[in-house]
Length: 338
Image 1: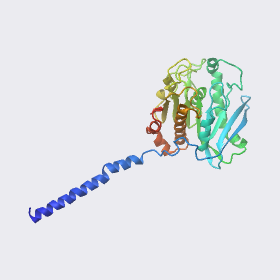
Image 2: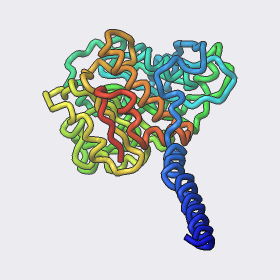
Image 3: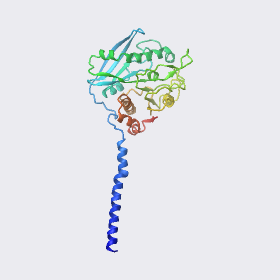
Image 4: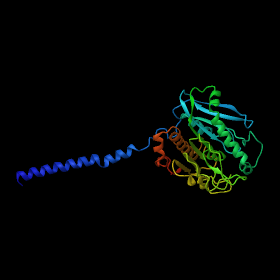
């Protein structure tokens, strides 16, 4: 090979080598870096106590002069001087403000004020029995949704009644959650419509001040006036949590409880289907291994949802946009979004 040919060959090898180096920097490695940049920030979504070490629980009484009733309320909050988002949590039929304490504590330790009303159908309020009869009464639906609106109307009053609260309520960052009949209540206040016995058109109990709803173990079509188009007008973010061992009151298969997810319009809608969860598995309590696993799923999913839509947290929204919940809790949950 001549000296000229040798130099040309050497230069070609240098060019090829540089191309390989550049490709390695701008090719797969750059793609990997781009992918990692959209990975969710998982901080805060592994069930932990939360950044606030101390919380306070207080019981107060609200008066509604229009309905001539007193509403007993439990409020849980962290000790801080910050402005805090507000979650109203509606209990199931015959229960009261004292349920779901572990999950409420989890939210409070992560910077939320959690308000638990005692509705008119609670054991402590009425001696009436008959689950289906009470749950099918439109008067009960109206009373429950009126309780939620009263609480929103009275946020300033509630804040003034708390003896150790040093922060302020962020009234514009407000969500409503609930379990069972409370899930139904949250859906109604979030925009679900129902058929009433004396009306031809569906009735709405929407409160437009609510930014997001979290129905846990709710109802599908065929109960309490819910119909094919009940969820057509839920236009705010919604997360449903249901369980594989949680059938309906009339033996509907467990996935029936998530019909609201399937029938609601797309956009910021989520459903967590928790393996092994029955109707009483969602309160966040500690217990045996299976219960702990279910509680971790509920705590993780619900906190990410509230952070995403009450705090407008982009990391939380990215977390919900991935399958990270399933990867964090394999074999414990199926997670759907639309």
